[in-house]
Length: 335
Image (cartoon, rainbow, N blue to C red; front, side, top):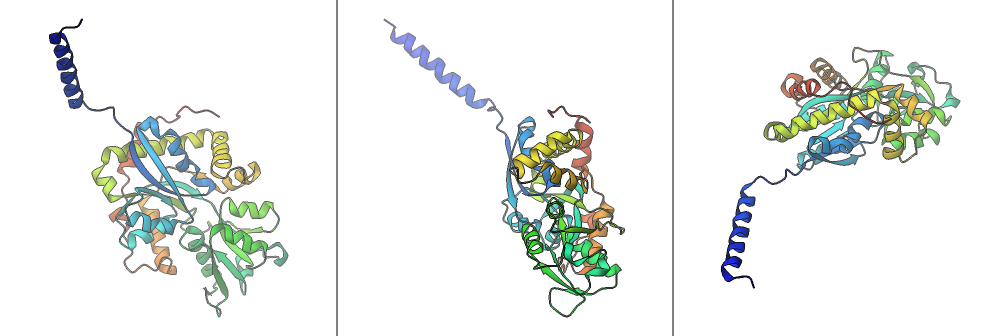
């Protein structure tokens, strides 16, 4: 029979072990980052981050929004730590007082002006007297207005100008073009490409013939995360760079993930490849591009900003530059 002293020694040793264990750091739990994202072909690398997040001791919780401007209230409420959106939406959010920093750029291009085939619209000049659909707050809006201005046309969402602007969501634009509710649209990918492939749209223009060139999408981080969780923020940016390079280096992986996981096979291989011929994954954005985009927004009244932010005050690319140096140029991945 076990003696009482032996039992006491056992429980004493057990208690000491528990006390010591309590003093040791627990196995590090993955840090949660709440990501706001949009459902577009060229947003695929950002979406893929959650798949490789454990490699960076992160758990990325992705929430899909209908458009970039919809993410702004969620960031104000502290529900989102990082968002991927149109640069214009990010600028408008900062202008309205949202405490965020722009920390990277993740895609370029992705805009196309498309018209109804039966109207024989061959140039932007042909849009005079027409109804043109666009989603508010993205590059497709500012680039459309720039092209109309270059052709000396006026526009408004009220009748009486050269072009009547019809604001609606991205999928709704395609439906409106199909049903001839609108005559043309300035649309993002892959929706514009799908309109071409299904024969209810024809390309008028890729609107990149301005100092803006191809629009760059923005990765925006809350000031709180940037300032108070530097280690988490840095690992997040490393994850971002790794996912982006993986998609650039492995286009078949990128296509499979976007088509099957993001769009649930509702986008064909031809849709995806033609869409990405008009867009590209990227890591970079420049302070100059952000400021120029802000200037164009002011010029055309996009975002209705009363206090436009100066790019130098909120563009913080130090985490991105450090991540680019620390992440291998060609991370391993499966095709």
